[in-house]
Image 1 (cartoon, rainbow, N blue to C red):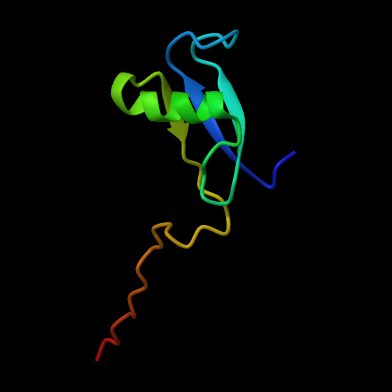
Image 2 (cartoon, one colour):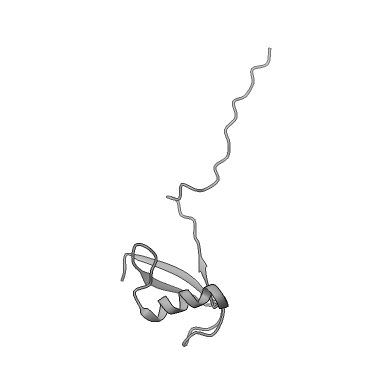
Length: 76
């Protein structure tokens, strides 16, 4: 299995994958699928929305919103 992969949700019938299913596609480090069939589906999905890329946040994600820390004011 590839070190890199992308999860996609199937929105239209593609091969034998049922609509609404989640598929894991092996990719290179830039997110480009190795399989020419999936490269074509990714390109076509920009027009027909046949798949939807699922973005997941993980614990190492530095773009997560962090609560702002506020110093308490000393009361006099």
